[in-house]
Length: 182
Image (cartoon, rainbow, N blue to C red; front, side):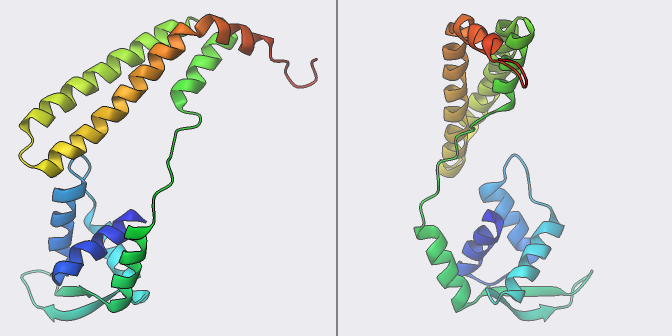
């Protein structure tokens, strides 16, 4: 859903071809994971069908004809509404890591080892992101790296907090009766 709004926002300044939109999107929003061309064109077709963008012209090129897209007044209205709406916080209520810790404790396996391995993985990711952050050439890139780093820091705090409570958690998960047991 965010991709369609991002494309609308990119079209608001000027009409563009799908190829240009893809590269602009990647440069601004998808540094680590570029969007596929097919997804851009599918999204543009859907936005056109819904009256949010219009084809302003078709140009012949070396390959297929290139359509130039422009945002419509309806697209601007929808973009305004989306930008004005606050996002719901999205805490990971039950992450895979949490599930692994509980299952390890339930079975008597050493959950602390899982936490240590995860901590090492998080610290390696943090090191790579910090290096990338230092090389950032724009405020936009720096803020994106900061966002990712802050989330990893929160995960690391959770790992430390969980490790300090493993014995209590182990007692709780071992004492939970299963179906048909009381």
